[in-house]
Length: 495
Image (tube, rainbow, N blue to C red):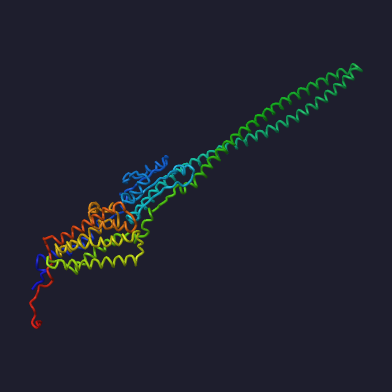
């Protein structure tokens, strides 16, 4: 006789459904997170602009337009971050522009909340650091351009200084030549003066001789002519000496003007060099990025993903318990509920004890964590009992499908903003989304403003599932056929 699992339509449906589970898991999870880094710019940002300088407004204007940016006050941004409405906060503090003007590294502040989503905080911090590097590069280019302008000024000043020094050297050489000519003229004037004095002496002697005899008058005329010639020579030497003096004065004036111009060029050289030495060191690090995690947040990957895995393990535990205690008709339902509830209680107890004793969780609210684990475990138990009691093996398969969807859509790993559009829309309606939110609050204090709604949603789901399980009268059980049909009792096996 053939196997009912292989020869009946129900058997083939069961085989197909089970065979599709690995494919469903792979396609669903990878499809949800195929390239989350491409979607990082979709993470919402809060901008706090505490400085109104032009440099601060330039930072705000540099935010990419595709980013979902919302302007907030410091207090409003902190509340939005703790509530999970934004993934990070960018603050341009007061004094940002003044620090740049004074040549100090300007502070730029980034705040993230690893407690609300650890991987989201890591990616948001990387995005913020990349943005800060872009702003720093732009400021660095501006400072280097100013340094280049100072360098050009210094170069121009150095060129002008060289030109003026060359001119001053030429004027100095001309002055030297004029001084030499003046000295030669002075020597010639002295010689002419000596000749004039000699002629005067001879004229005096001749006049004395003339007084003694008339023939001496002829010699007197000759001496007078020589004296006149000496006087003319002296006059010419005096004119040459005066011209040399004027040339010397003009050369001295040119030298003085050249030196004054050279002093101005030296000042421009000093100013340009000063601008270069002022801007270049500040271009190396124009910004100082300060990254903080609000209230400490989750300090490690394990702490950050603990809410996700705690919620996941409770759902898997409730699903596995249905293998031991399956569904069935109304008769015996109470016994099945009691047995499965004991198993669920054991699972929660062992999970809580093991997680707290074996892992460095350090929950912020330990009592709330224990209460949350018990409540979430009870909700998952109630949902899974509803599925197997009303749908049989089909309910267990549906529990697996819900598990796969919640792995991708609960926001336990990457933020919903980094998942595919289908899972972003599905995220608010998944039980594990609510469970992760509650567990994050108990572990790190994050999402405090949203934990109450999540707890109420879980309570409503668990209560509704339990009511439908106990008092519902419908049952659409799909039971997979056995591998082998029930065979007649073999000979020799009786008694």
